[in-house]
Length: 187
Image (cartoon, rainbow, N blue to C red; front, top):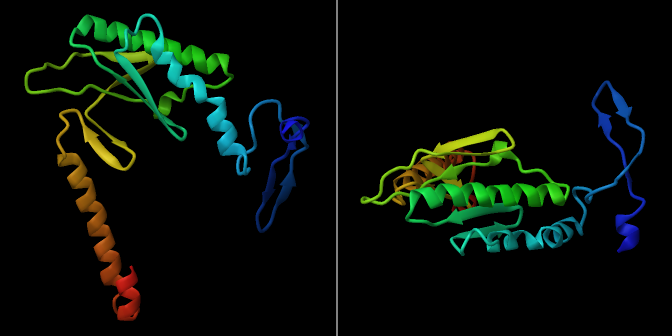
């Protein structure tokens, strides 16, 4: 294992029809090269303790961090709007500090937050941020191929599925005259 992680080098090679170029070798000081067999396992071992962030003293078990491969979702529950905002900022600060301590960075371009509402609840206007990166509330988000909206209805998910099925049906109709029926049945 040590030989896999130490004294590793990499370089970038650009090749197209008219141009070939190669950078000089650089030492890999942190991380694992993409495309490696052990990379995903080492990554999961590396981030294994991130879920302990939500067990800090100021969360009072109102937050939960769910991790799936390299995607994480933070769920915070609180009936009190003041505590809710305080909890969001506290946990987000803890997560950002964990990233910094582990030589990682939180990608705010891929970060968003959604506030779930019921018929009896009102929207709390908040913007979440850390290190001068501000994220505003969104009304729906795709999560593991399921479109979730802030009222937990399935309308946006059904609309997404209808669009995908429409594209798939068009593709099947377009190839019908070129492909045998047995082949179409496999599609």
